[in-house]
Length: 142
Image (cartoon, rainbow, N blue to C red):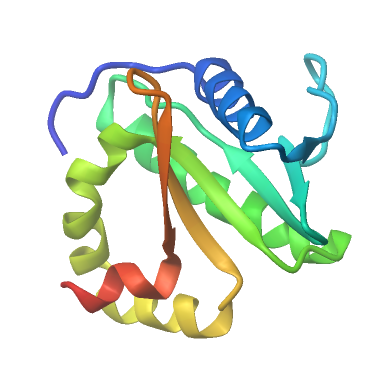
């Protein structure tokens, strides 16, 4: 996956919260240090998105560990009644996403089929934008 500029979880979460607020989503309060639970619940038009946020660490193994832990935290929100779950990451993860999908292709497809409500949101902190992808959609172009 190569060198990636580190980006803190807090920076990604703050940026995404600001964007969603501008898009007139109603947001849950930001959690304090050590508090458990979903990072962001963004609601609009009767639809709520349960969003787990991870940053990007410098070392590839630490990024991978965060990604896989973030995935499990995201799907665990189904226990909270979530109908839409998202793992939000810095857009720099997008550069290695095809490689990650290819490496785990069969599992990736099956996860997408098992969790149709699961999305990945890539957050561009520099341009203050984000792109949403259904988990299963990412396997289609590989």
